[in-house]
Amino acid sequence: MRNFIISIRGGRPLAGSVAVAGAKNAALPELAAVCLASEELELANVPQVEDIRVMVAALRALGAEGQGDGALREGLEGHAVRLAMPRLRTPLVAPEIARTTRASVLLLGPMLARCGEARVSTPGGCPIGERKIDFHLLGLERMGAEIRAEGEYLVARCRRLRGIDFTFPGKTVTGTENLLMAAALAEGTTVLRNCACEPEVGDLAALLAAMGADIEADGEETWVVRGRPALRGARHRVIPDRIEAGTYLIAGCFAGNDVRVEGVEPAHLGSLLEVLDGMGADVEAGGGAFHARGGRALRPAAVVTEPYPGFPTDLQAQLTTLLTQADGVSRVRETIFNDRFRHVAELNRLGAAIEVRGDEALVRGGTRLRGAVLRTTDLRASAALVLGGLAAAGETRIENAYQLFRGYEDMPAKLQALGAEIEILEE
Ligand code: EPU
Image (cartoon, rainbow, N blue to C red; front, side, top):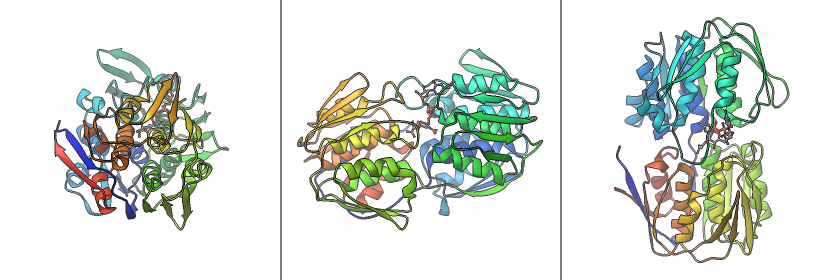
């Protein structure tokens, strides 16, 4: 696998507009939904990022046909993907694929529902702590699947899945998505309670409805799905990526910057807007855009990551970088993943003063950042280090930067257009 170093000469002001791509974490389950029907799905606004390419490759290996991976690689105009799965050629998701993106687990429910069999290598993805899938498996077993581990594979079999009344023991985004897709083709009615409420879940539900699924929300956290014998093809536009939008919004709040973030859904970022407002940042939302100006002194914040609509764990690292520039001590508590502070040691190399105590990071603000050589371990940490490098004086090099491209479309080019001095070098 090719890897990259990102080199940044920091201290240049960022100014101008940046457009947000479609949401990676909505497009991933929506691509998995290709398995549910023999007709074509046409998805618009699919981001051109590595995790999506890997998912499209996995679908190809399963038998999907149409425009997808090749077109994506060549930079398809309009970010459209058209794929159909006339039949599942083999119910196998290979280790090379599952190791790269954890989203491969999203194929389990759809494959079982479509053909009664799935062999999925145990998923990988970002090293950000324990990432269990026991709730996915529990739900599928309750629907009638027999699941066992065979080497590095999970092997699942069933006759037709049957509807259940299931309460998730804890909130899980991909778990909710997996069971919604399985339920769409199950026999009878499924009621899923204590579901994750992330906008990406709602977007998947909208796609399933367009495919002919009988799916309806009952309040915020419950879905009722009456299973259908088959689903049909559909067209759907992926929602904007709220995490990418939040990352550029945070970038705009650093001193000297003036950034408009276009094509956003402000309602999806209420928790971030509230935190930035509490910090005294100069931020406006309206007309499908954010405007951030980094002129004002920033106050420290106390932030706790929570399931939606709480503060997203996927913006925790990026906000932590901004908090190094606030006047005073901030507290950042991570409650979703148990090992998601790996960016802290790297930010400290830049001169930040952050101490991790258990599930909390104490950020002493007002530190002057200076360029350094850093190594990133996961996608969102990479974005946090890029923000650090932009704010630091001198050159910052970020190794293992492949991680960034798993989930941010063209970030170096977008930042260059804002005036950043940033380049990609082969590692
Ligand atoms: N959990 C369990 N059992 C399960 C499932 C989850 O104990 O069966 C625990 C996990 O160990 C974790 C917590 O519940 O501590 C939340 O996990 P969740 O299942 O919600 O996370 P996920 O579905 O694996 C998605 C996103 C992540 C994002 C999280 C939380 C996708 C493809 N990934 O992961 O995105 O951080 O929800 O919002 O949708 C990213 O984009 O950088 C990223 C990591």
